[in-house]
Image 1: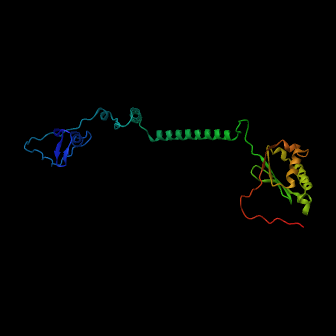
Image 2: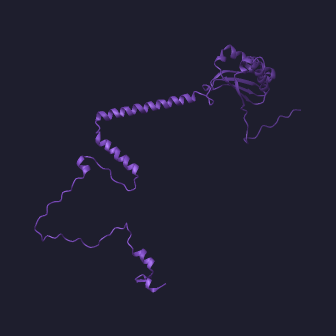
Image 3: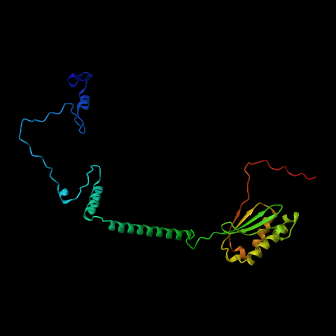
Length: 257
């Protein structure tokens, strides 16, 4: 590099480009003076009249111009000017302010009511939009090898009918037989008709649990002549048999002979 392009300073020799970067004043940099300010010249005894600030046209008319922000967009500036102009032209009184607040509150309440009505309309109809959503009643069939329990509940899980094989007169080992479960299912279908529950039940969900003889017996009842009035109300059949994942050790199997 030519030595004519280099500058020698206390930091050593630097090139022209580095000197331009280091010593060129930034356009946004402020000049700070370290010298003391000069005293005012009092040699002229003629007093100077005080300088009065001239009022701008906006101050003379009573309007307030918003501060100009170089970063604000033109649309934001115009909206601020329009808002302040409207405020200056129409001064608000306590009465007008109260009326405006009351109208705003009434509009908000009307909007909330319309939203609630729309939500109620949506919740009162099914996902297909053909009618109101009706939660089904539940017919629980708990069938073990020792007994059979049948319970009819409302959609909120409140029991309407709760019977077992012992309710209709079976005792001891006979409670776990297929015949006892069949007669129990027929008894429940009869009670549903006698108590007039068919008018209250719009949908019915059958919940089967465990694999005793009563499981097949109640299924036969629903498919037979005894359950012809209830069979058309069934919308779902599910299994609620409990499964054990790990857990405690099982009982020792019984040895006969």
